[in-house]
Image: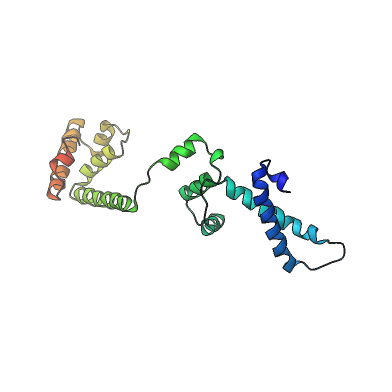
Length: 194
C-alpha cells in the first residue's frame, strides 16, 4: 500500500509507520464477524492514515487541525480558504490566485476609517441638500446621478428657460460649496468643480 502512494523509497518508512499505527488503533474497534477478516476491516483506516501522511508532506505549511475543521464547516472567508488551499497544494495554484494572496489586505482599522469617512461625507452632503429648494435639489441630483436628462427637459418640467436653469444650477452648487465650508470641509477639498 505504501508503494501505491509514492515512488520515493525514503517516504515508504513513514507511510508504513502510519499504516501500522492505524492497524493498532483498529484492534480495539474490530468486532469479529463471519466473513469479515481483520484486514478487510482495517484497510480503509490504513489507507486514510497513509493519505493524510502524503498530503501532510506535500503541504508547504503544516495547517493546524482547527483551521482545517473551520474550512470544512464553512466558517472561513474566501481569502482564508484560498490561503489554506495554497498552503496545502501550491502546485495547483495559478498565477492570478498567487498574486491575489500576495496582495496586501487592508487592516480592519483602515476599513473602519474609510467606512466612517463615507458616512460622514454622506451626512454633510445630505445636510447641504436639505438647505436647497426642490428645483435646486433636482438639478444637483441630476448632476450627481449623471442623468441623460437634458436641461431643456428639466426647464420644461419646471416651466422656465434653459438659461435660467443653468443659473439655478450654478447657484445651487455655490450654496452647497458654502455649506460644505461651514461644515468644516476646506475649499481645497471641495475644489472649483461642481
